[in-house]
Length: 336
Image (cartoon, rainbow, N blue to C red; front, side, top):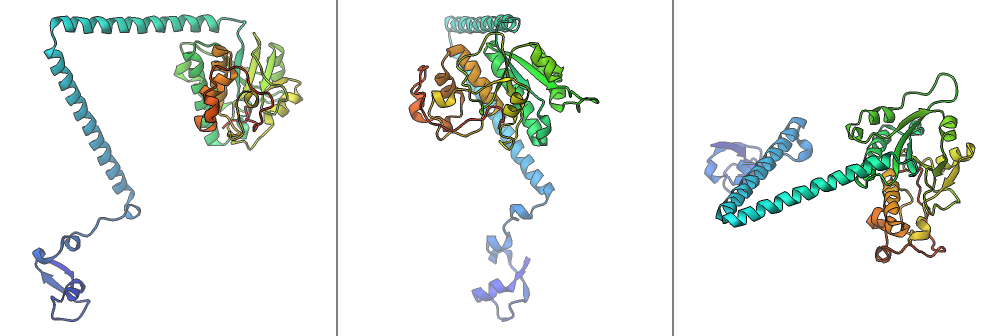
């Protein structure tokens, strides 16, 4: 027996006493399930421990389902293997071995290409400029580090058609600059171990005097048509959600550095595009251009598809575009 509010029984006409607040001992069999077992608490009323327990139970159930699926797949594969003849098994083994050999050959070719291009002084360089770390908040710093790592992986997967470089500026005055968190974390990144990119800490004057430099900025009046051999192209590696618009262009003008912008407006219809590109979008576009020599194909393949009009996706491979095509500027220096 359980104790329930007599209000329910009063409404049902099963009680003689008319007092709605009276309680009574009743038979559980007479109590509807939704009364005897009230609904569980809503999510907002649960404690943190209860929520964690629910997540843990869901995670455990998901792992168990995945384990069961793997076991069933393995059993089915084993059954299929046992049903094959010796000739069929030999053919499958030979095909698998050939596939592995092909994969190892491709990996070796990519390794040789990476080593050769990293040592090639005539190739252009993409440099990630970390000197603007001070304009970012904690979230922006983390995002910048992730984007630089991802950009490096894009270059490595393509065999380094452009060489990577990471630059951190040392203050020109006395006392030096605060240690760069971005540079410290990138130095500790294991993904750089096989093909380590140069990491340069220097005053800007010393860095710019040692190589020809072009700063990529959406505010530049100069359109980048091709990448010059042996030239270093700087990317403002910082995330500010476009709150520091024009920062890289102002810095380049102050130090008499050439600037250029990606030819997005001249290559595709950018009218409805987002005005801000991430660091990895810029790198991906340049890498694709170095392989295809077509900016239209590069932008169509690399920019977010929601921003590329359907009409432009059919133009892949066409390196020409209407120079008068209108479009919004796409920031290259002020990323994310």
